[in-house]
Length: 227
Picture (spheres, rainbow, N blue to C red):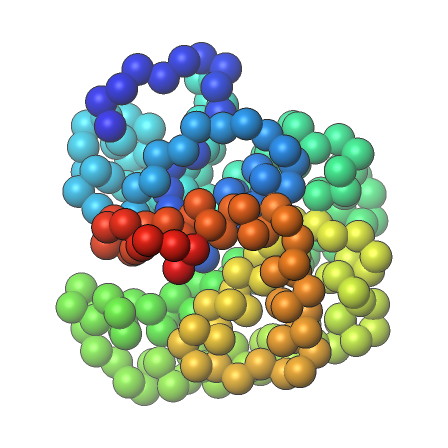
């Protein structure tokens, strides 16, 4: 930290988690050049005056675009696609039915899959020293994820290969990162969801973004590979 950033340059702070993976992936899908600050969550760098001036919530990821700072992974993906991704299909055009369906899936994934279930598992598992152990909450969260993700499985069966049908969008970025997270914590995925993740992992933008995002461990130390 402590560096002077040039106006007009895209800069992304954050690495090592599913949430930081999302904007890295979007930036690579859009072919945008950007500067990286590979800072892990809960690292000391997030409490510095320099970073708190960027994001007072002391969270990653954060995107800088000139003099504008955008936080929250889903918001960053939407911002990048709306501002720089005309014609890419990464977000449907505002005011359309497709955009309404897109927003619906994004909010569902962020709340029901990420915040209400997966993050509960993380809080009372990996971060139990901060939030306390709660085995019952973890078990309930795993069951809750399985119930909610069943609707995703049905949607892909009915409309696939992507959440909005034939077009890959930011919603697929969010979903893939949550499904990978679920697999990591031992939540079984259906064959269809496993195939979906495998197909999305074949995208060149996913592979280059993953290599960068997971080049450090969550504690900020080098990972020595894609991780």
